[in-house]
Length: 169
Image (cartoon, rainbow, N blue to C red):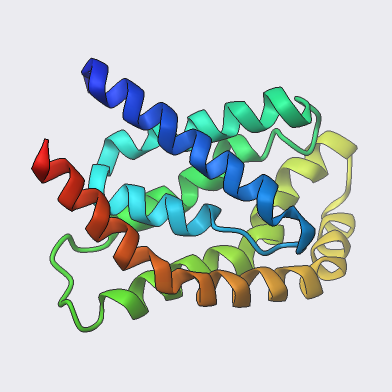
């Protein structure tokens, strides 16, 4: 996966856009465009989408602190990327938005569950403690999943603009 200078610049900017969008939307808990960008970048850049995704993760650590909350970010976005990579490349245009919105929503609904194993290891939680932690976060995961679904309407337009920009260059 050798990168060109242009790709390094583009992926750096896309990672920065992810981070900036998160900071702008922090006023509304669990509502953000990170899943939208992760899915859109994966549709367009496939394996190389990991570059802007991890640029975001590193920026998040730099500006918000490399604390224990950050450790699950090392795998959480990769899971969403991996699911999108497993989807067929040629999904019929009519169902693309719904499929991508559903995948994005599922990641939001499962965010706390995916986050929990790392927290259990870090804080020495038992399996019951981890389940309690997941249950306590369910209201936030519901907000996260619903907002990811609604924001997911932007996935196809963002991917289309990125594909157009790639063709023009």
